[in-house]
Image (cartoon, rainbow, N blue to C red; front, side, top):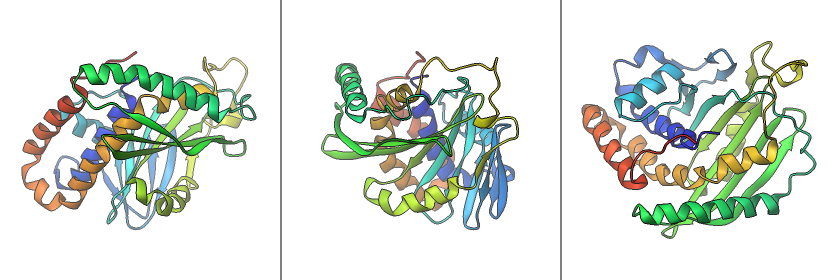
Length: 282
């Protein structure tokens, strides 16, 4: 799994917050009620009071800010008058076997994440960034064999500030739809029912569902536990650190929209300050 994927996803969420002002993206803004396509992989209902921005728009805005794109961005969905966002990216890793569904050892997975974070903190400190402390599970990994969805959330701190991300991995025939809910930590519990209601109206396209796996299809080289470790070990701090800026832009978008270019430049400087340079793929 690419190390910069979750950074890229969050950048998309930030830029989606200011996208109503961009003339280049107005045509790609889909307001509910509507049905939105997540590339050629899936579709999701956009209810009244929500806006959806497709993958092309997400990538265009990311490039305008000087941020790298993976090419796998599927789009983002957000309430028109709320302060959270749901971001989608598809990882074509192949069919992920769920034979670990009854063997997800939360303590062992958390230990792996803490070990990886301790190693990553050495580089963070060398780069002048604050270390991250993993507090524990907000929601331990759980897999639904009916929907083939894997969920988890890790709580952490950095410089005394709470950090939280909520991850969902929706398993399909040819890969995994990575879904990230960006929300303030203290708003998670009240947001989750609405978020899950949105995902209940998500469907893989015909031929892409988990149940349509056929012998000879590409099979992923790792399973459910590795999905959690790979998605959480590097991403927890980044998502949390961006949440405050996301909310600031969301609240003040009427002011931000008059100076999109200036905001894009400011975001570039912000990213460089937080990470000490661009992340590379691994």
